[in-house]
Amino acid sequence: MQRTEHHGCHDPHRPETFHVYDVTLRDGSQQEGMQLSINDKLRIASYLDDFGVGFIEGGWPGSNPKDSEFFRRATSGELPLRNAELVAFGMTRRVGVKAADDPLIAALRDCGAGVATLVAKSHVGHVREALRTTLEENLEMLRDSVTHLRSEGMRVFIDAEHFFDGYRLDRAYALEVVRTAAEAGAEAVVLCDTNGGMLPSWMGEIVSAAVGVGAPVGIHCHNDSGCAVANTLAAVEAGAMHVQGCVNGYGERTGNADIVSVVANLELKYGWQVLPEGNLAEATRTAQAIAEITNVPAGPRRAYIGTSAFAHKAGLHASAIKVDPNLYQHVDPARVGNDMRMLVSDMAGRANIQIKGEQLGFDLSDRSTAAAVTERVKERELQGYTYDAADASFELLLRQELGLLPEVFTVSHWTTTSYENAGSDPVSEAVVKLVAQGRTQYFVGEGNGPVNSLDMALRRCLIPVYPTMAGYELQDYRVRILDGSSGTEASVRVLIDTTNGERTWTTVGVGTNVIEASWEALCDAYRYGLIHLLENRVESGEERRLEDAGRTADTTNTDGTRSSVDSAV
Ligand SMILES: [Zn+2]
Image 1: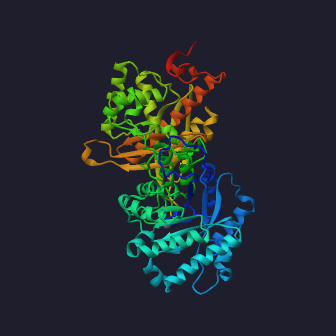
Image 2: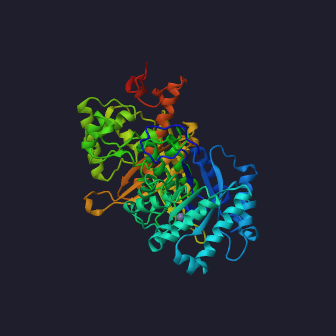
Image 3: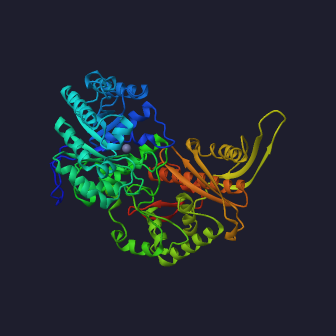
């Protein structure tokens, strides 16, 4: 990728061209539990291209029908690329066959991609024992394969497998592989720490030696020593001009270098620009979208882009953050498209609660109000509630303390029973009676379990009064048995995620049994959704007013804070 802008780069090794090369679709997909369809791969490649990586390694055409089909579809119009080149992965020709006659080389040549990356042996032990050939034939295989694909008009990279171990065993031969590849026309010789055991302080000498041969050098690290990103950066500092890695650090065993961490460090710490201008701010969204497609959850503690990456919990930190966020953050989260998040927890002091309240649009500048809310949170957490994830329940608690909680509905009673008829599946029935907007609603719901039947009954009561609510959907439901030693009476905590198709909110319920806890989380979920629905109507000037929903209501002031309004006005 040609880079013309230099953002404060002081590194004499900084090359004019720098490659960001993604291997998520090949190496990353080796991760345990990951199964990518061709459609998945096309969608992931499209996100990677939007993000602005220079190369996307798509797979190994010719090695299996799925990868061949991926390349056929990708190169026949289904994967329009704006930033990236599609790369086909393969290996150097087989022993004793001309590259031009090797069917796997032909598959690379004919797959439609303009770039090929060939894995080559650089470790004498692997040449002798895995390839069962001579050191000279291995070099010839490399030379012949690169020359052939270059003569066919392809750009070629070489992945020098087990390079670091090979270098230690036979330095001269490992460097001979680098020299041979470069002389044959490889655009970069990528030094692979295939077993991932390297340490950053070991990288410099070996990478420098390879650079000293006169070859453009790349780096491909695995994370077995927990150092993949650090090793990648150490290689870059020693002169590598091409970095390989996977989104979310995917990959077999402990994964590959996390390409987003690598790129974020290069841009934010080194001051280089290796993605198109402004694209780094898409990092969080891109990694999250790819995690949705792979269906392999990406940890909240990923550097830069995890949901916890800028989440502050300790009260002492929070007080300082109020003064200056930069005191406790290594970079501005917005640079990578992430957000600072305040966690509401029993470790929290008043400052956390104030910031969290302000983020939700409530004015908590009054110290005694903030202190009262903090007390209430601590009290509830002692009972087993948690508000770290349950933002919506926190907002309801806050509204209650501030007297800003409209009564969108009041439950009179609820009950649920389950029964089983011989020969059929168990069925649950629930009865809910409530008052909403002055109307008494009384409905029975049936479901495949008690919580499901309660949800059905509750919805049947509410939808006639609030028809828009029909679009609400429970998205996720998590039950946690609480530790008996905590001394609380409650034993179960339930978290429910609810969506209206545009956004998702989380509520929490706690009780002595799972049904009681679920009912609380369920009611909070609809209460929160309805309050926001009604507020939006008021803000958008619709006639329906909050007075229908309760005695007090609130509205958003122009300064973003909320205040109580007399509903009769
Ligand atoms: Zn690898």
